[in-house]
Length: 351
Image 1 (cartoon, helix red, strand yellow):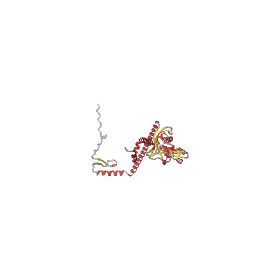
Image 2 (tube, one colour; image 1 turned 90 degrees about the vertical axis):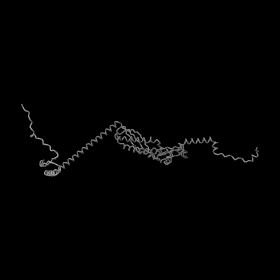
Image 3 (cartoon, helix red, strand yellow; image 1 turned 30 degrees about the vertical axis):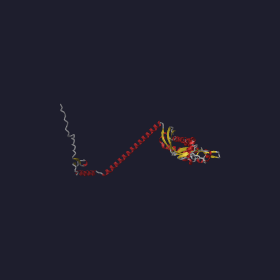
Image 4 (cartoon, one colour; image 1 turned 180 degrees about the horizontal axis):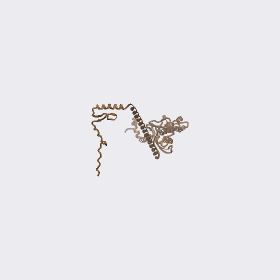
């Protein structure tokens, strides 16, 4: 058995090194809890921290806390109005207490049904399609003073008001036949009304951004009305029948007018033709005499006599002494007996 003095003379053993595995093993419960809490926080906060802006859209950044202002001992906050601070397409990281509002910059379309009264007091139901687009530089100001519901709060009421005003200038028949003019007037009137009224919504004192008056005219062109299409017009059935009947009568009258003009032109054509024939006969009759015609007949007879065809020529038996020509191959019809040569009828004997 070793003595205590001998043990004191020996060198002490070096302490054994402990690695990270042993540390994890010794604190397994704490490490597991920390990992679960971190994973839970990532899962919960991921939708609020990592934001994807799709193609054709833009994000408006709203900050709950921006920076501290010692003048008012408060945090500057709110919507970032600077167009350079808009979040473009792609992946973006924000603080979980901030928000990113997504707006569509592509061509958008909406359809609304509008009831109006025509100039002659007929109820008109019009189906109108509006195609519009947001301006990139004014999206943040639009979000600040109008909001994402701009279609229901601005576009639809404005288009409806202008459409009713335009339709009231036309009669029911004109509304039925003046589609292009109504579309153009509604579009021009809507764009003009939006430009005149939207800027009134900007309130510089309501924003904490530097130089707020710089954004006074941003809303004027924030919504561009590209075109307005009149998809359908519904009138009372009695009015539609009357318009169709009137249209049919109009085209019938046009058909009758065309017939009259055609007959008049035909009459003129026949009159001109008759005048030409009369003038020709008058001109020819002056240069032709009986002796000339007789000489031309004799010349024609000589030519026919020299022809190899078989024929019989009787000289001097025709009118004015002109020859009569018979084809020998064609039998000459027998002369009918005259009344003088017919035998007398035999009378029955009398008693």
